Length: 300
Image (tube, rainbow, N blue to C red):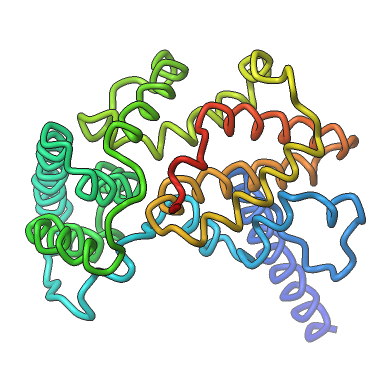
């Protein structure tokens, strides 16, 4: 009887622990899509272009890397670098502050010099640099080392990027005008650029417009005069494929497509009207596309 009681108690404890873990995972999933392990996908979802965008990003970490990670730096980083930092939070905070200021100074210089490749490399770091302003910093010690290596040797990496990727197919003015376009739409909600340069913050501005449009659908209404779901679907599918041809354009725009598809997936799984969700997000993409005109950024 005693053994049965102990076994039952242990079962209850394990059940509670498991339940707590599941609840924790679900609580965190507001940022990322709810992934289904089922092999049966509803036909309407299977037909959505957003599903094809996030196909292959089958974990939180892969999707997070696609939305917030670097694209251009993957082929530029050294195979190894020294990282022997103290785990003391005060030390790490001081170190991180120096690196963030270095990043801001490089951003201002690259913008004032109209250094397009330099700006693109810095824009590619923008999301991850922001993690160096959070607390605690101990989980990001290795990232602090990596960012320090990149920024201290920035000119060498810039030359390497030119060798690996070639010249961008668009101009500095193209990128500057794009950043100013989205700044005009989002400055009231975005605030001041993290990098001290709107053109370096452009990738984040592109995603911020999407975030704002999700909660304020009137933002997209001025762009819908020639909208149809079929046209928007075609543009989204074609753009996703074309970005694979141009690493610079991909680094700018692919994070926004994944960000949009991620929000679509979350709303789709929690909506009683999935067709309405598809329509909403196709309209948001249409407005975003009209503002971006991405074809001018893709290699010709």
